[in-house]
Image (cartoon, rainbow, N blue to C red; front, top):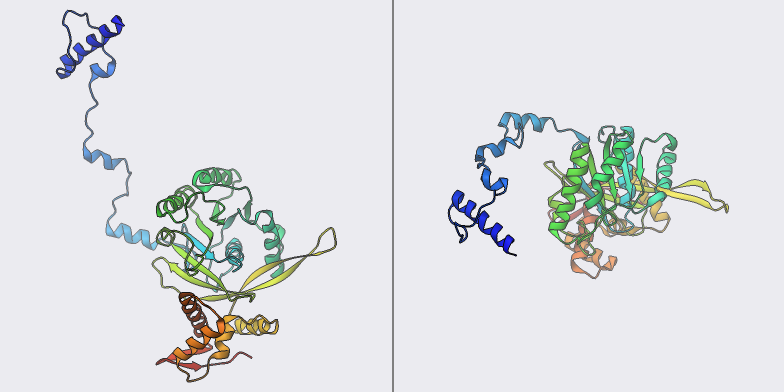
Length: 388
């Protein structure tokens, strides 16, 4: 105990000599050499200007540099999905959002135009966190529907369950080991790869930062996340508002009741005008038979032109799958007041929630206008063409 006290007092004497009084001491106590940090003193202050040099050249740009960088932006899909973008495909369960995300990926895979727009060929990596190995059926169906050989598809697939907030960098390393340079990484779905509170802006923003840093930026690729829509607010992704505010694109997928048709709405495209909604047809494709002789099938999504949409709606009606879009067309009469159409549509659709009723009407109305079936002028309905 005495030796410990002597050491403390001796060190205090050295500290006092260097920096002024720190502890009471006795000059008669022999002193010991203090640690190096005491002798050397504190490190010199780094001038504030030096901190900026650590960020590297090009951090502060001139407006001409900025213009050159903006002009260098390239597109995965022209004016829809940017290269090195981060975005979402979202929709309620059963709306075919995963099929449409896969359709996008495979079009990119072969450099085929998507939604009538030019794409840049790139190898996709599809993280099938929800569908798992069942994804192969969808890949086969997509190829067979187009008369293509699925065995030569360059897509890479990940079926291992991952928590991307902590394992995104491990996924990047695994991809790099294959020698593939991905153009797209599709995460299907967010709920299967995110641990945390979906309603927390901080936690969701951190998840998106990890995807941006460890996947998008590290691999110079586009990251698309498949996610569910809100339980009531189906027009937006489920959870925190940070999802929309922190992404480059967000596409909503909506299904018209039991129809094998889906509508893709462009909820957000950063710095670009949003195009009108487009429609997809989901066709069942036969893949063969299993060991018990039962038929194996899957679905394939295909973009519909306006003429193709009309034919698809006729087919759906014959199958007894009319849907709300067809309901609106059946109720619309030339010259009728729109407020009357809106009321009778809500009554016939049997939607109790006021907001859901309103959104269902305007979604069908927008679809009917964009498809060229009706126009709305001065509060009245103009029927342009009818569906048989």
